[in-house]
Amino acid sequence: MMAPFGKLKSRKAMQNLNYDPRKASLRRNAIIWFVFCVLLGGGFWYSLTTTLDDMTKRDCKAGVQRACNSLQMQN
Image (cartoon, rainbow, N blue to C red):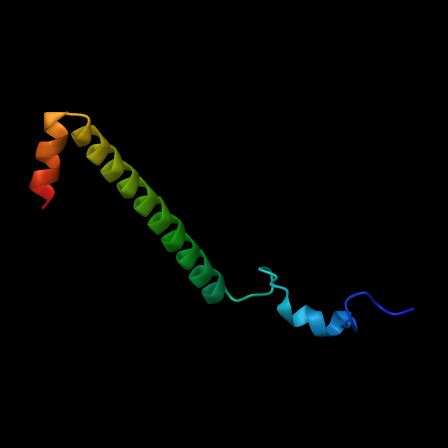
């Protein structure tokens, strides 16, 4: 009987791809956490600022004068 997705790899070959934080060095774990926090914070900041900018533009189109003034101050 043949495997449906071709030849299967052995478990020993796949062990190098698994990340075990208990076996990794402290420096490697710190770098991984730093990158994770920067990416998460950057994504949060981007989504928050674009949402607020879009809301301000929509409010300006609806006739809210303070929103239009805020957009003029940004340019």
